[in-house]
Length: 241
Image (cartoon, rainbow, N blue to C red; front, side, top):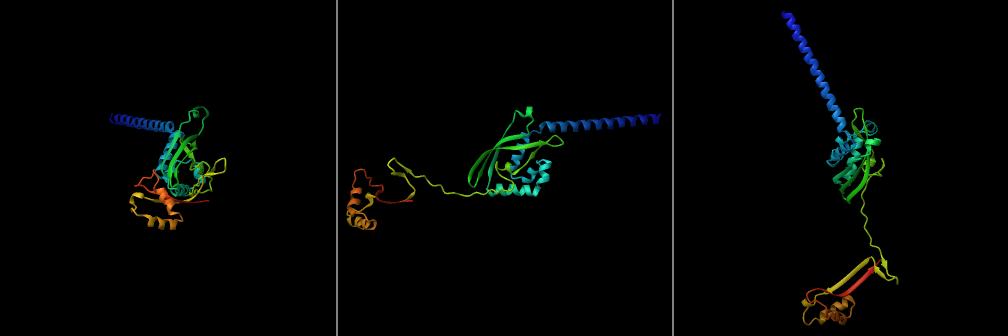
């Protein structure tokens, strides 16, 4: 009787272990299924750009697909991204990913996004696309290339910031008289209210330095519109180029 009871207990234990194994397998299958369901190109792209904003290039590399990893080592990938983003002093990196509603019909594996970032040359923004594809587990991975950094960036090209001084255009009226020109303007002004009552000697010295008749300076200072507490221009010299 004891042996029969023991055999019954063993059967129960075996059945319990088998049932537990089935439950574990079922749970694992559900988790894998849910991961596949949750893995869509937009979410993977958002995760990729979140890591980029934090400068976690090594973790970004883990989101790449197997073929990309065969062609680009982690060291090369990390160095390329770090050199470019840190070289232009990129900050406040933000990518707005756009969902593609047509993917349900044509099974596209790309996402569109708008990138914005602050750089040493000011704010930079552009529209771009990223390619992704499913791996053997049904999880989307990034098919990376240098164009994911900037749309027209080639694999062997570098990014460099250079400052170019802007020049204002020259405008002329119909009589070919310049309305706007580039050049240097020097101007001298006097504040009448701070000048001595007898300032003829001072005007004579100023006129001699500037090459202006003291009488013309006196006429400018005596005009009815002159404000005695503000500088009044008495000389202007322009040099255009």
